[in-house]
Length: 281
Image 1 (tube, rainbow, N blue to C red):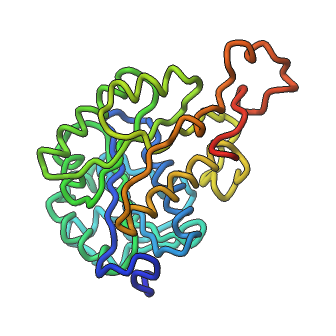
Image 2 (cartoon, rainbow, N blue to C red):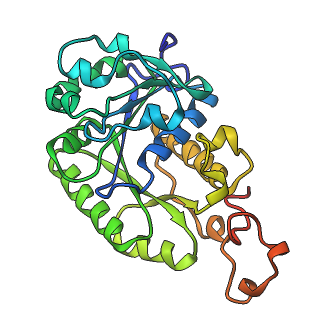
């Protein structure tokens, strides 16, 4: 795994994206998985690291068995090569453990060497982080070439995303943009753009029927959420090529029903509660 170097980027080492957000349950792991699979499908060699040391859930979400975890590497009981596990769509996973013993033994400071090793072997390294502002959640912010903030429309989640951005800047992490998940109306987009100072790179609609089997880009490829994740991965490809990151434009968010359209019949709405398509999807 990780055999072909920089097939798309032309750079000497891979690009490290840290996917962060202060609040739990906002969709950080889902974002990492779908972006990773989409970028793998686009021809990049991708590894996803479950750096949520307290509540690791990457392997469990995907139903993937593994023999060795990142926690064992951080406890100096295994090599990073022992953890590499094949995931859906050809993406490589570095799973974590869920036990308190493993968490207690893992040293977050050793994550730097792990990420450096992976960046020398893969085009793209996606770090899935934990919630909160703890030491283990902060370390990945300073290791990233680019930090992506993830938030739901919830006011607490938006506030925590802002705090995460401030923390990233203190450890010299570069925040390049925000991802809004579970969006249901235009006013939520407006609030995130108003409250978070970084560009809005993607809006992922709420779609309850398309979240039962990850990754969406493989299992529900025609869903609005899958289209949104693919749009996000395309935006991130620009970053890999050294180009300016692209924010969404107004035309790409015109998939919420207007006030006049909300009274349409159920037959006129799709399975995601009236979301009519995203980014031309």
